Length: 113
Length: 115
Image (cartoon, rainbow over all chains, first blue to last red):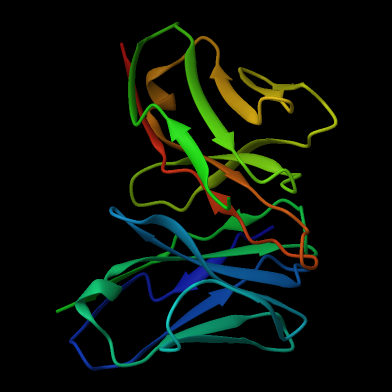
């Protein structure tokens, strides 16, 4: 069974630009969550989607948004990039919502110059 | 109250030794506690998880000990091997406010197992 895939793996952008990251969950998984990982703040929850609905949102500014499609694939978008948005963005998928095993993808390394 | 505190920040263990990483939480609504292992350049991988209705869970060389009254849980890696060298994260989640997979992560422990 294929794992969680994320594209692209690496991305370099400049301040003010916007970026879209993609995540394909494990086949059959309906829940997708996004996390930001930085050396200073660690792993922080961004948002969670289940059956195309956002179920939960972390404490991030409105520049961070996401969506989920009917095939459970998810995208997250960051607009007006800031230097502090440089991070590893991780996607995790789970069969259902709440207390289920979550499987992480390899992440997208975003660098903002 | 949403924090999970993890210690130590780094740990050096000799091959064959026992690695112990500790986590503490405040929110009594937390009811699912997974541990993740992360190698450089990779995403976190689920190692083992526990719910508060048991005090210990063992899978191979990895054991979670859970103390509900103290609101603490720990990961023990028996017979530690150089291949175990990685960053370990504890986490917690709660259904409070509705079903959610939102994980609250500890700050991570960098484990180095010396040959």
